[in-house]
Length: 254
Figure: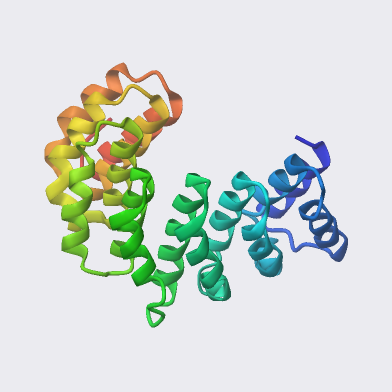
């Protein structure tokens, strides 16, 4: 990664107000003919106070010729919440038609975040329902269900649907379902025993961290023995941290 871009991203993530020079630099990078440069610049906008100054440029990234750039753009624009309402039509189009499945997944998540930030706007519900039922990618279907639940759209129904994906043959799908249920909190407590099984089956440390966090969020203390057992044999530092946090949240001692 370009050292200048890295330094700029760090500076902005720490909360410094961007200068006109910095804004123009990133705008130029987002227009670069090199995909890697555009992608790096867009990734830097996901967690940066620069992003609120560049909503239009991030939105333009939803039309980028590269699928990964479109995917990252959706994540960045979704983080803007209410300020991202003008991007809804492009995100809906991305969710429905993008050939790059990760771009559809991040579009679904972004639409859920925008819908949660602006409850009065219901334009995202129909396309999310359609994606939850019809998308070819099970991850996108799972994320769409979670997005609908985040918007308080038939939460019990979405929880029931998401629980089915906890038994999917693909580990990534199971993790995404667990993560979506965890984002809902204690309303998904009934799914905790199934999420426990997902954790026990998971072979990837990164995914175990997400699953452990979900168990902490769903709030079932009966999950504690499995979390404590998993922590004892966990080798991934990030997953260890998530497990400790989940154990403490459930009232246990890591």
